[in-house]
Image (tube, rainbow, N blue to C red; front, side, top):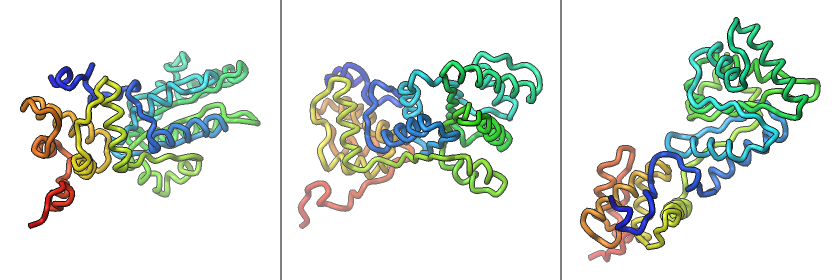
Length: 282
């Protein structure tokens, strides 16, 4: 494809979250630091929220990589369909026997958490795609979050999900759960400066140090993507592919426009503003 044409060692704009290309921009860095600080303070439930494509999975992987050594991790990448399934999944992650009813399983989990705490270890459960958890699973999380000694929580929980979970937690019957969420971080879209830094960093990561986009194109790309990293990746990938197919040295207006037209979720930029492109009004 276009990688060698632009001097890249690999594709710079893949959709698969790659921690090697993580750029510590404020929205993602703040979410990671908030979660780590809350865990170090012994808080029970932490919530990281973000729209589709804002980088939640990458933040999740970076958070896992940065967990201090005294935390034992139970990572659940897919949502549980019931309270029992959730308990079983956590038990399996902690190598606890998962057979039996919920009462017996909760008792075994409690004993395991106490045993690990006595050895100086804390347990953190990270749940991705938390917006898809049913209410009974959320209630199970709340009850597990209540497991504690006289001084501290035995289980720490990080929920990572889309804003739909925020709306659900405002419902009256989930008010007890909402009160247990002590810290929350929200992944916002990137601003234009962050978008430019994001694109240039990813290009540099794969060995491309050429200026492939002009400032007007960066502005149009940011407007079209609305600062959503996944859409930025799609637009850049398609624009570079179009540029390569036409054997051009850098991305032009037509190549970016083609990428925008072929990308779901991309908006038309302000093409009607001539000054954006440096054109002169008649």
